[in-house]
Length: 244
Image (cartoon, rainbow, N blue to C red):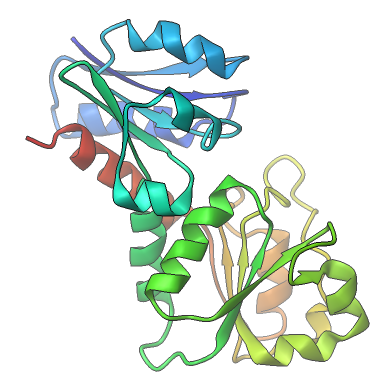
């Protein structure tokens, strides 16, 4: 039996667990299981490495912390500074970032080919790192918004000068705001200046239409949630684990 799994903490709402269990059944993939490994401390990963695991996904809060426990890093993961896939081969653990691939493919499908504007990334956590690398590789200029000082903008900056958003037609939410069950929450933006020329990308996928997406759609913006990205990164994980 090959064991794959997910490390993070907590893991009550795991997309990967359900997705891979259904994948194994639907595609008649034999002798494989997908388990959740809630680690209260990243140091517990050392013990897990010795349990003959075939491959792991990594989620909050360990996408960055796990790097010091790995033997190698893929070039994208190294550039991004975050890992969400671990491949075990010949006694070595190698880190990859499949969020990069999932987001990139999904974003290319979402934006019009002639998109020429700038992007704003809401949030500065591990998820935002893969998003930044994709925008760099697609030559889309971007700025970062945080609640804290020290980044390009704070939310107060945007609310004090809403016209800033006239120059940023792609707005990407990498924060967990609006995730079930806190479905009424959304980033603090001046939504009244949003137009039909804006594109709202929310990495949250549950609910399928977040309060952030609803507020954008009410102003005519195009919207997408994070499900397509999640499916893309999951399939990339499977590809990485099964590399010859």
